[in-house]
Length: 288
Image 1 (cartoon, rainbow, N blue to C red):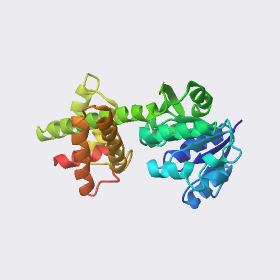
Image 2 (image 1 turned 90 degrees about the horizontal axis):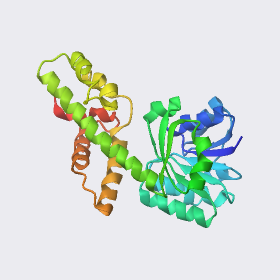
Image 3 (image 1 turned 135 degrees about the vertical axis):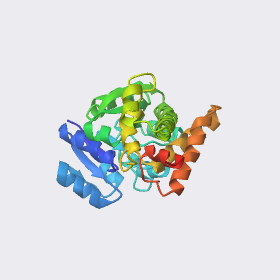
Protein backbone atom coordinates (compact mmCIF):
# COMPACT_ATOMS: atom_id res chain seq x y z
CA UNK A 1 0.00 0.00 0.00
CA UNK A 2 1.14 3.53 -0.73
CA UNK A 3 1.85 6.46 1.56
CA UNK A 4 -0.42 9.18 0.19
CA UNK A 5 -1.24 12.77 1.01
CA UNK A 6 -4.41 14.49 -0.16
CA UNK A 7 -4.67 18.29 -0.26
CA UNK A 8 -8.19 19.72 -0.27
CA UNK A 9 -11.24 18.10 1.30
CA UNK A 10 -14.19 19.75 -0.40
CA UNK A 11 -17.23 17.94 -1.79
CA UNK A 12 -15.00 16.17 -4.33
CA UNK A 13 -11.70 15.78 -2.49
CA UNK A 14 -13.07 14.36 0.75
CA UNK A 15 -14.78 11.32 -0.82
CA UNK A 16 -11.87 10.68 -3.20
CA UNK A 17 -9.45 10.66 -0.27
CA UNK A 18 -11.91 8.41 1.56
CA UNK A 19 -11.81 5.85 -1.25
CA UNK A 20 -8.02 5.81 -1.10
CA UNK A 21 -8.15 5.17 2.64
CA UNK A 22 -10.74 2.44 2.14
CA UNK A 23 -8.30 0.68 -0.21
CA UNK A 24 -5.85 0.44 2.67
CA UNK A 25 -3.49 3.27 1.74
CA UNK A 26 -1.81 5.32 4.47
CA UNK A 27 -3.47 8.71 3.88
CA UNK A 28 -2.48 12.06 5.38
CA UNK A 29 -4.82 14.95 4.62
CA UNK A 30 -4.52 18.71 4.55
CA UNK A 31 -7.31 21.25 4.33
CA UNK A 32 -7.24 25.03 4.59
CA UNK A 33 -9.97 24.69 7.24
CA UNK A 34 -8.40 22.32 9.81
CA UNK A 35 -11.78 21.29 11.21
CA UNK A 36 -12.62 19.58 7.91
CA UNK A 37 -9.39 17.64 8.05
CA UNK A 38 -10.06 16.57 11.64
CA UNK A 39 -13.59 15.45 10.72
CA UNK A 40 -12.21 13.44 7.78
CA UNK A 41 -9.68 11.68 10.03
CA UNK A 42 -12.41 10.87 12.56
CA UNK A 43 -14.41 9.20 9.79
CA UNK A 44 -11.69 7.54 7.72
CA UNK A 45 -8.63 7.21 9.93
CA UNK A 46 -5.17 8.32 8.82
CA UNK A 47 -3.93 11.67 10.03
CA UNK A 48 -4.01 15.37 9.22
CA UNK A 49 -1.15 17.81 8.67
CA UNK A 50 -0.96 21.56 9.33
CA UNK A 51 0.53 22.47 5.93
CA UNK A 52 0.73 20.97 2.44
CA UNK A 53 4.47 20.51 2.91
CA UNK A 54 3.99 18.60 6.14
CA UNK A 55 1.39 16.38 4.47
CA UNK A 56 3.65 15.67 1.49
CA UNK A 57 6.81 14.82 3.40
CA UNK A 58 7.82 11.24 2.68
CA UNK A 59 4.73 10.54 0.54
CA UNK A 60 4.80 8.21 -2.45
CA UNK A 61 2.00 10.24 -4.05
CA UNK A 62 0.40 13.61 -3.40
CA UNK A 63 -3.10 14.39 -4.66
CA UNK A 64 -4.83 17.76 -4.74
CA UNK A 65 -8.36 18.97 -5.34
CA UNK A 66 -8.63 22.64 -4.42
CA UNK A 67 -10.42 25.66 -5.87
CA UNK A 68 -8.67 27.51 -8.66
CA UNK A 69 -5.25 28.38 -10.12
CA UNK A 70 -4.18 30.53 -7.18
CA UNK A 71 -5.15 27.87 -4.63
CA UNK A 72 -3.27 25.19 -6.55
CA UNK A 73 -0.17 27.37 -6.84
CA UNK A 74 -0.29 28.01 -3.10
CA UNK A 75 -0.51 24.35 -2.03
CA UNK A 76 2.22 23.27 -4.45
CA UNK A 77 4.69 26.16 -4.83
CA UNK A 78 3.81 28.45 -1.92
CA UNK A 79 5.96 29.02 1.14
CA UNK A 80 4.55 25.86 2.73
CA UNK A 81 3.83 24.11 -0.56
CA UNK A 82 4.06 20.40 -1.20
CA UNK A 83 6.63 20.41 -4.03
CA UNK A 84 9.54 21.49 -1.82
CA UNK A 85 8.86 18.62 0.59
CA UNK A 86 8.28 15.85 -1.97
CA UNK A 87 10.97 13.26 -2.46
CA UNK A 88 12.55 12.63 -5.84
CA UNK A 89 10.48 10.23 -7.94
CA UNK A 90 7.24 10.91 -6.07
CA UNK A 91 3.94 11.30 -7.93
CA UNK A 92 1.76 14.44 -7.95
CA UNK A 93 -1.81 14.24 -9.27
CA UNK A 94 -4.02 17.31 -9.45
CA UNK A 95 -7.80 16.86 -9.75
CA UNK A 96 -8.64 20.56 -9.64
CA UNK A 97 -10.22 22.13 -12.72
CA UNK A 98 -7.71 24.87 -13.54
CA UNK A 99 -6.03 26.46 -16.54
CA UNK A 100 -3.88 24.43 -18.88
CA UNK A 101 -1.21 27.07 -18.25
CA UNK A 102 -0.75 26.23 -14.58
CA UNK A 103 -0.89 22.50 -15.38
CA UNK A 104 2.04 22.96 -17.74
CA UNK A 105 3.86 25.11 -15.18
CA UNK A 106 3.54 22.43 -12.50
CA UNK A 107 4.70 19.77 -14.94
CA UNK A 108 7.79 21.84 -15.73
CA UNK A 109 8.49 22.58 -12.06
CA UNK A 110 7.97 18.93 -11.25
CA UNK A 111 10.38 17.79 -13.95
CA UNK A 112 13.09 20.03 -12.48
CA UNK A 113 12.50 18.36 -9.11
CA UNK A 114 12.28 14.89 -10.72
CA UNK A 115 8.63 14.46 -9.79
CA UNK A 116 5.98 12.71 -11.87
CA UNK A 117 3.13 15.18 -12.47
CA UNK A 118 -0.36 14.50 -13.83
CA UNK A 119 -3.14 17.02 -14.45
CA UNK A 120 -6.28 14.95 -13.97
CA UNK A 121 -9.55 16.90 -13.79
CA UNK A 122 -12.69 14.83 -13.30
CA UNK A 123 -16.26 14.61 -14.49
CA UNK A 124 -19.15 13.01 -12.64
CA UNK A 125 -19.81 15.50 -9.88
CA UNK A 126 -20.20 14.91 -6.17
CA UNK A 127 -22.21 11.75 -6.72
CA UNK A 128 -19.45 10.32 -8.90
CA UNK A 129 -16.85 11.09 -6.26
CA UNK A 130 -18.93 9.52 -3.50
CA UNK A 131 -19.78 6.43 -5.55
CA UNK A 132 -16.29 6.01 -6.99
CA UNK A 133 -17.49 6.33 -10.59
CA UNK A 134 -15.67 9.43 -11.81
CA UNK A 135 -14.35 9.90 -15.32
CA UNK A 136 -10.77 11.19 -15.20
CA UNK A 137 -8.99 12.88 -18.09
CA UNK A 138 -5.21 12.90 -17.68
CA UNK A 139 -2.40 15.00 -19.06
CA UNK A 140 1.27 14.20 -18.55
CA UNK A 141 3.90 11.66 -19.51
CA UNK A 142 2.96 8.03 -20.03
CA UNK A 143 5.15 7.05 -17.08
CA UNK A 144 3.37 9.51 -14.77
CA UNK A 145 -0.13 8.48 -15.83
CA UNK A 146 0.62 4.77 -15.55
CA UNK A 147 2.02 5.30 -12.05
CA UNK A 148 -1.14 7.21 -11.11
CA UNK A 149 -3.66 4.84 -12.71
CA UNK A 150 -3.89 2.11 -10.03
CA UNK A 151 -4.38 4.77 -7.35
CA UNK A 152 -6.99 6.76 -9.29
CA UNK A 153 -8.89 3.51 -9.90
CA UNK A 154 -9.99 3.71 -6.26
CA UNK A 155 -12.62 6.31 -7.23
CA UNK A 156 -12.83 6.28 -11.02
CA UNK A 157 -14.80 4.23 -13.53
CA UNK A 158 -12.86 5.62 -16.51
CA UNK A 159 -9.30 6.93 -16.79
CA UNK A 160 -8.10 8.27 -20.14
CA UNK A 161 -4.61 9.53 -20.93
CA UNK A 162 -5.48 12.39 -23.28
CA UNK A 163 -2.01 13.74 -24.01
CA UNK A 164 0.88 15.78 -22.66
CA UNK A 165 0.81 18.19 -19.72
CA UNK A 166 -2.23 20.46 -19.88
CA UNK A 167 -4.21 18.13 -22.14
CA UNK A 168 -6.26 16.84 -19.23
CA UNK A 169 -7.37 20.37 -18.43
CA UNK A 170 -8.17 21.06 -22.08
CA UNK A 171 -10.29 17.89 -22.19
CA UNK A 172 -12.19 19.11 -19.12
CA UNK A 173 -12.87 22.35 -20.99
CA UNK A 174 -14.32 20.28 -23.83
CA UNK A 175 -16.53 18.55 -21.26
CA UNK A 176 -17.84 21.84 -19.86
CA UNK A 177 -18.41 23.36 -23.31
CA UNK A 178 -20.56 20.35 -24.24
CA UNK A 179 -22.49 20.49 -20.97
CA UNK A 180 -23.23 24.19 -21.41
CA UNK A 181 -25.02 23.65 -24.70
CA UNK A 182 -26.79 20.50 -23.49
CA UNK A 183 -28.26 22.00 -20.33
CA UNK A 184 -29.43 25.13 -22.17
CA UNK A 185 -31.16 22.93 -24.75
CA UNK A 186 -32.93 20.89 -22.05
CA UNK A 187 -34.01 24.09 -20.26
CA UNK A 188 -35.52 25.58 -23.41
CA UNK A 189 -37.24 22.32 -24.32
CA UNK A 190 -38.80 22.00 -20.87
CA UNK A 191 -40.03 25.58 -20.82
CA UNK A 192 -41.56 25.07 -24.29
CA UNK A 193 -43.36 21.94 -23.08
CA UNK A 194 -44.70 23.80 -20.05
CA UNK A 195 -45.83 26.77 -22.16
CA UNK A 196 -47.66 24.37 -24.49
CA UNK A 197 -49.51 22.87 -21.53
CA UNK A 198 -48.02 19.42 -22.04
CA UNK A 199 -47.57 16.77 -19.37
CA UNK A 200 -43.81 17.09 -18.90
CA UNK A 201 -43.47 13.54 -17.55
CA UNK A 202 -45.11 12.16 -20.68
CA UNK A 203 -42.93 14.36 -22.89
CA UNK A 204 -39.85 13.05 -21.12
CA UNK A 205 -41.01 9.47 -21.68
CA UNK A 206 -41.57 10.22 -25.35
CA UNK A 207 -38.31 11.98 -26.19
CA UNK A 208 -35.64 10.89 -23.70
CA UNK A 209 -34.97 7.51 -25.31
CA UNK A 210 -34.47 9.04 -28.76
CA UNK A 211 -31.93 11.37 -30.31
CA UNK A 212 -32.84 14.14 -27.85
CA UNK A 213 -31.83 12.05 -24.86
CA UNK A 214 -28.81 13.05 -22.76
CA UNK A 215 -27.41 12.78 -19.26
CA UNK A 216 -28.74 16.25 -18.55
CA UNK A 217 -32.24 15.31 -19.68
CA UNK A 218 -32.26 12.01 -17.78
CA UNK A 219 -30.94 13.51 -14.55
CA UNK A 220 -32.27 17.07 -14.51
CA UNK A 221 -35.57 17.22 -16.46
CA UNK A 222 -37.79 16.19 -13.55
CA UNK A 223 -36.03 18.33 -10.96
CA UNK A 224 -36.01 21.36 -13.26
CA UNK A 225 -39.76 20.88 -13.76
CA UNK A 226 -40.14 21.05 -9.96
CA UNK A 227 -37.79 24.06 -9.64
CA UNK A 228 -35.36 22.06 -7.50
CA UNK A 229 -31.76 23.21 -7.80
CA UNK A 230 -30.14 22.41 -4.45
CA UNK A 231 -27.73 19.71 -5.63
CA UNK A 232 -25.05 18.97 -8.20
CA UNK A 233 -22.50 21.34 -9.69
CA UNK A 234 -22.91 25.01 -8.72
CA UNK A 235 -23.33 27.89 -11.15
CA UNK A 236 -20.37 29.71 -9.59
CA UNK A 237 -18.07 26.79 -10.43
CA UNK A 238 -19.50 26.42 -13.92
CA UNK A 239 -18.76 30.08 -14.64
CA UNK A 240 -15.19 29.53 -13.46
CA UNK A 241 -14.85 26.55 -15.79
CA UNK A 242 -16.42 28.29 -18.78
CA UNK A 243 -14.12 31.24 -18.15
CA UNK A 244 -11.12 28.90 -18.43
CA UNK A 245 -12.49 27.46 -21.67
CA UNK A 246 -13.14 30.89 -23.18
CA UNK A 247 -9.65 32.02 -22.16
CA UNK A 248 -8.07 28.96 -23.76
CA UNK A 249 -10.19 29.47 -26.90
CA UNK A 250 -8.86 32.99 -27.28
CA UNK A 251 -5.36 31.53 -27.23
CA UNK A 252 -5.94 28.66 -29.67
CA UNK A 253 -8.37 30.40 -32.03
CA UNK A 254 -11.44 28.25 -31.35
CA UNK A 255 -14.85 29.91 -31.66
CA UNK A 256 -17.28 29.22 -28.81
CA UNK A 257 -20.44 31.30 -29.42
CA UNK A 258 -22.81 29.00 -27.49
CA UNK A 259 -20.47 28.62 -24.51
CA UNK A 260 -20.00 32.39 -24.37
CA UNK A 261 -23.75 32.97 -24.48
CA UNK A 262 -24.50 30.37 -21.81
CA UNK A 263 -21.80 31.92 -19.63
CA UNK A 264 -23.70 35.20 -19.79
CA UNK A 265 -26.95 33.40 -18.98
CA UNK A 266 -25.27 32.01 -15.88
CA UNK A 267 -24.19 35.53 -14.97
CA UNK A 268 -27.90 36.42 -14.97
CA UNK A 269 -28.64 33.45 -12.68
CA UNK A 270 -25.93 34.71 -10.31
CA UNK A 271 -27.59 38.12 -10.29
CA UNK A 272 -30.84 36.37 -9.37
CA UNK A 273 -29.07 34.89 -6.32
CA UNK A 274 -28.50 31.45 -7.82
CA UNK A 275 -24.72 31.25 -7.73
CA UNK A 276 -24.72 28.25 -5.41
CA UNK A 277 -27.55 26.46 -7.18
CA UNK A 278 -27.06 23.56 -9.56
CA UNK A 279 -26.27 24.41 -13.18
CA UNK A 280 -29.78 23.32 -14.19
CA UNK A 281 -31.00 26.52 -12.55
CA UNK A 282 -30.24 28.18 -15.88
CA UNK A 283 -33.92 27.52 -16.60
CA UNK A 284 -34.83 30.24 -14.09
CA UNK A 285 -33.87 32.96 -16.52
CA UNK A 286 -36.51 31.69 -18.95
CA UNK A 287 -39.38 32.58 -16.62
CA UNK A 288 -42.28 30.21 -16.02
